[in-house]
Amino acid sequence: MIRFITGCIIVIGFLILSIPILFVEWIIGKFKPMTKDTSSLRIVQAVFRAVLRAAGVSVTFIGEENVPKDQPVLFIANHRSFFDILLTYTRCQRRTGYIAKKEMEKIPLLSNWMRYLHCLFLDRKDIKAGLKTILTAIDKVKNGISICIFPEGTRNKGDNELELLEFHEGSFKIAQKANCPIIPIALNNTAEIFENHFPKFTPCHVVVEYCKPIYITDLDKDERKHVGAYTQNIILETLKKNQPLV
Image 1 (cartoon, helix red, strand yellow):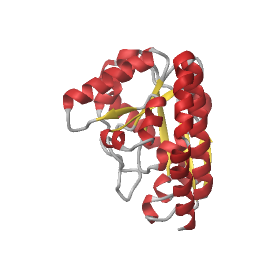
Image 2: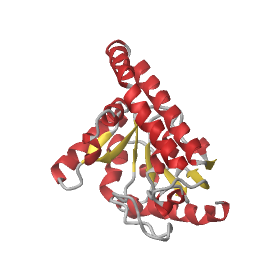
Image 3: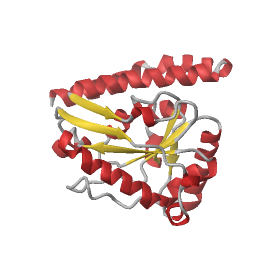
Image 4: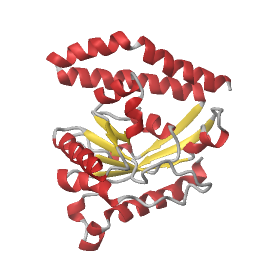
């Protein structure tokens, strides 16, 4: 419980104390948007690393060399824990926006930082609004900003991490329309950090693997039509491979 309290203090303390930082970042963004984007990214990454240390998480990262350094990408990952965002965001080398559920837009200060980081809010109940979010994400990628999405649509709360929820094919329109590579991310054992021991943070080891890029234009017709299922299978096989490592 001490780890959980410490993590909460770090997050809440940062959000409160960062109010003047938000203002400074806003001013910087008026004159040097790229500088603001980079500094906001590094600030939040530092906070996320502090939370991971407080939770006692050790991580093995595999395949980071598979992430192109010269172009934006669409990150696609399985989703079992709130910590999936922290784990992957700490490794972003370039500007990356996450697609989050609409409800998070109502959280003061947190939503401000998310907007600074090019995150988008998806209303899963409104098809028209959801399409608009996807179109905005496409524009982000075309402007050099990577996007990360969890295509299961929600956290998978099943007991077996190998039983993935269906990947929504609409998520992959971002890569198709923006002509960017897809980077599948396989996250092993992340629910063990918090969700499996709620409300405690539990020290554990997780594995995060960045798989080889998928270029939609290189796929055959059937794979292109079902790129969500194709990507899901890659993540599933990677999860199976890495289970002995946790």
